[in-house]
Amino acid sequence: MEKPKVYVTSRSFGRRCARALELVKSVADVERNPYGRTMSEAELLEAVRDVDGLIVGNDKIDRKIIESARRLKIVARHGVSVSNVDLKAATENNIIVTYTPAANADAVADFTVGLMISVARHIPKAHASTIRGRWDSREFIGTEIGGKTLGIVGLGTIGTLVARRVKGFDMRVLYYSRTRKRHLERELGVQYVDLKTLLRESDFVTLHVDLTEETRGMIGAEELNLMKKSAYLINTARGPVVDEEALYKALKEKRIAGAAVDVYSKEPPSADFPLFELDNVVTTPHIAAYTEEAIKRMDMMNAEDVVRFFSGKKPEHIANVEVLERLKERGVFLE
Image (cartoon, rainbow, N blue to C red):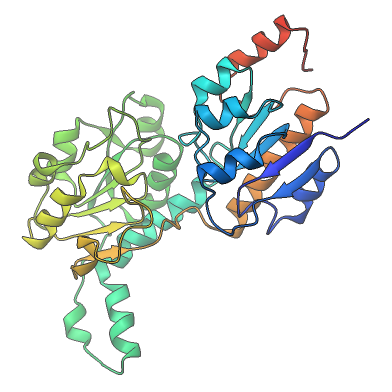
């Protein structure tokens, strides 16, 4: 019997976890993205024409791609969201979409705390100065995070892990979330407040929300104006959650003390991206989730879901579970 064909667009999958790639190869013939970058629409259209499964990174899998892949049965997203996959189109075409929820949560939580310390203590600037042969100690007088107030916007898995970590710094933790988490209030001593109160009272504000129509631009000029002049904004969520022009103005005019940004509305940003010219910003290239451990977890979650599917079993991390009922109606039963 001919093996199904799986095409891997993700540049990360299987590179650090050979076992994951071998698992997929045990049930399918595997081809990989040869370009070393995110694939274009034309490249994807050619690649998916006769594949049964996809393991995708940040490549955009839209309706056109999905409907051109006549044999496609499963899309495994190598990531914690499916924002780059047209879930509606996949569901309408009876294609299961899986992902790797919370696989990188610890990595992002660690990185968030690291950014807070880096921007408050001017660590990147101090490093750059020192390796240039300078010794400007008094130019890098920073701010302690211990005993300060942290405002967490979005108390999901990552936000909760951040809250746990900063308790070691004796920080007062406020949070704003779509749903109130009373059990976490009791367990961690965090306090639920509305967004305006959080912005007004926090010394550090960190964002941990998904990108939706509701959250797009949720931190704009009005919200930044509510923050303390001594406060810092940390964004490891999604770039479009913040109005970057408004953030640039607030930072340039010193209406807030600083920001640390790992995500951008356009990635990669252009070399003349305005935030790059400011000295009160720490910028990184969307690396919060990039740890050896997180990538290996994502690899194995993808691989195990793909193997389960092609072995006639239900994947564990399905984003569109309604497809299961559609498949049953067509006589396809997954154990």
